[in-house]
Image (tube, rainbow, N blue to C red; front, side):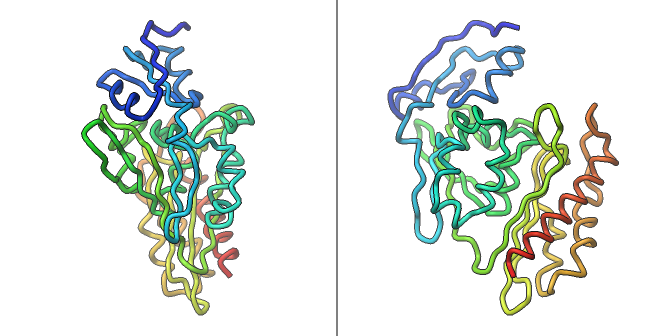
Length: 282
């Protein structure tokens, strides 16, 4: 199909972009998530604001013990950052499997997160890393924890006049191991079910355990069951925690996987991610 007509604005700077963003406006950077919606007329904006060339929204830099990532930073730039790969290997591990080469070269981390596809790979990573998102409008700035950002399928805590400008990552805990496991839909590459895990160990005991899912439900979510691993060595409880993490979750049902099968895949992904994170923490 052909998109409906719209006004196109290439923002010269962040102020220019924020001024243009309104109720029926869409923002484009890499465009790999938005363009299909435009073609199928699932999105029909009056104005399309292009922020892909704004250098002030790009870049990766250290901040205290953590890091800050500009929202218009491409996946390719994430993969090329040694500092980011050293401190948060989970980000690089997941980014390597996002889309194809063209998507990684042009797609942006902020665009993917703001799009909030319920089967995207990066949201659960942001949840286990306890990231914070900086949102900005003409009226000012505000910070929203990743754990409060995703509200539903393609729905976030952003207001119509706000732009995601930066991802802030706290320092990972000492002795942390991270891992991601997923089962992808063959044609699209999106996760039928995926799980991200973070485990920290001190003196042979788990001091922190985080587990988050994507693809399983309408929105990515943290599993409280992971807390059962804290204070243990972990080995004997991982299967139990993986099963408890998906218990009672209303799983998605579509042409690719029914609820029972998707729940099974999520359980296996959780077990694999937790096992590998534990191994890497040791």
